[in-house]
Length: 58
Image (cartoon, rainbow, N blue to C red; front, side):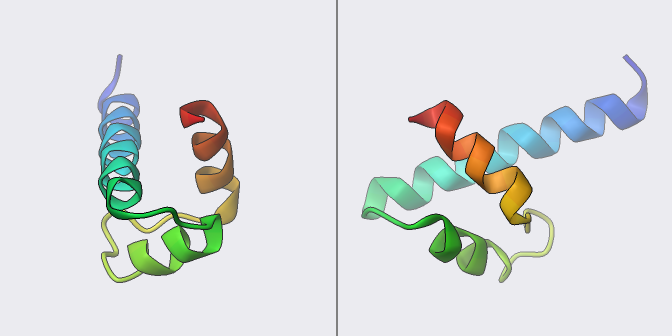
C-alpha cells in the first residue's frame, strides 16, 4: 500500500468516525451532515462520499 492509499483510508475512517459522533447526538439528514462537516476542511466531503457511507452504516 502506498502513502496515497494510506492517506485515503485514514481520511475515510476519520470521516466515518465523525459521522458516527454526529448521529449519536441526534438524527441528521445527509445535507445537514455535509454542512456540519464543511466547518472542518480536513473532513469536509461531498454528497458522492457521504451518501454511500451513510448507506453502508445503515
